[in-house]
Structures are given as C-alpha cells and as structure tokens.
Image (cartoon, rainbow, N blue to C red; front, top):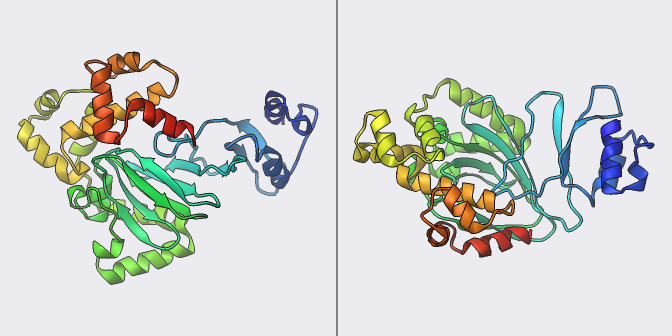
Length: 317
C-alpha cells in the first residue's frame, strides 16, 4: 500500500497518508472523488484490499489524449468523477490490430464536445442506438445528453471498413445507424446483444469479424508514414504508386486522401504539444508548418477555431 500512501501524501489527503491503510474500493473511490480523475489498481480474486502498482493523475480530454490502459486481465481502469462532474474517458487496446475499445460517461448535465478529426471510424453504442461514426474531415460539435454511457470500438488504419464491410468514404462526416448500412435483422440482433453487455459483446464481435476479414495492408503503412510527416509524394514512391492512385486507394480506407490524413495527424500533434506549454511558434516549427500563421490557418480549416481558442476551450473542461 506504499503507492497509496504516496498518493495521499502527494495530494495532501490526511485520511490517505502513508501511515493509513484503507482496504475497500468503496472507501477508495469516495476519498479520491474530488482529487483524481482515475487510477489503475489491481484487485486479486478473493482479496478485498487492492494493490496499487501504478497510477496517474492526468487531465483528460477524450478528443486529444488516449489514456494507456493495460490489457492484462488483472487490471481494471476505475474512472472517478472530478468534483465538477467532468466527463470520464478510458480506452484500452483489443486483441484486434487497429481496434481500440473506449468508454465515456457524461455527467448530470448535457455536454457539447468539439471532436477533432483523426482518420478513424468508430462503432458506437450510446445506450439507445448502435451507430457508425464515420471519419470526420473537419472538427464537429457533438451534443451528448446527460448521464449517457458510451461504449465503442475505434478503428484505425483501415480496420473499420474491413470489419464493418463499409468503405470509409461512404460514411465520411456521417453517423448513420448500423441498420442503415447492414441488413436490418443482422444489425438489430447485434444491437440487442450489445445492449445486454456492451463491452464484452463489442470486443467479441471484433474478434469474430477479424477472423473472416482482410484489412488492406496499404492502410497501416500509409498511416505510419503520414503520422511521421512523410510527404504524399514520398509515400507514393515508397509504395510504388502514383499520387493519384494512392489517393484512390486511401478513400475507402481513411475516408479521404493521404494529404488530408497527414494534415489531420499533424494538427493533432501540434495541439498535443501546445497543451504542454510549448509556445505556438515553436510548435509550428516542430510539427512542420511554415510558420505560426500557417498553423493558425490549418487550425481554423480543420478545427473551426484558432489555436488559442482551441486551447482555451479544452482548458475549460
């Protein structure tokens, strides 16, 4: 319990000092509710006292940060609301390449969230409907009703179109119900199963579909090079394709061509760096923009606001 004591000492919680041992999860959550967003613990079967092998106190933003959650069967991520009921978000990798399972809960009041594009496709359950969130070409404002629990699979690198059987460009900037894309009976049966156990059902579905689906190997290769800032011309040369052919191949995989994908990924890198306090001019230079004005233009084009406005918006959450 030394890690727990260190956490209490660090946060100044008298009841949680290094000389105190609090054995139950209920007490743990109650005492930490106003101090920390989440932490990772290990609960051994039949043992009430958890072991604290690792923890974090991050500032969560579901649009920008992806929290590392171990997929070891003994680990669980415990999301704990902050005092002002900010949304809670966790994610972890699945056994399917390119697929991440994420969960988000909304507080007691409706929320509006700016979602930045990421070149991914999601299969989402919100407690009422099972729908596909296609890749966004620009940021969009998503309105969530109060007290919702989202459970979803996020697919990158072409895994989504392969498993769902839907080209990404056909659902770009759309959120259709799965029943609009699949035969109605098949979609309804899956939705009914997901409603009973969202996490287990979605993950099992992904594993089953991956066994009978083939992901275009071009997707992961383009994604890696685009994320590294490789130019479209060089990507095409390395793949032995013309830039026009590469663009056509990327549409069903990502929803748009490699140039927009690279712009989207570069913007996300820039926003993440700027949130650590790096000056915008330095961020622009480090992420490959011509100058800070170029970064501002790209942020307006893809996020719908200025870099400063975006940081202020995320900082208020």
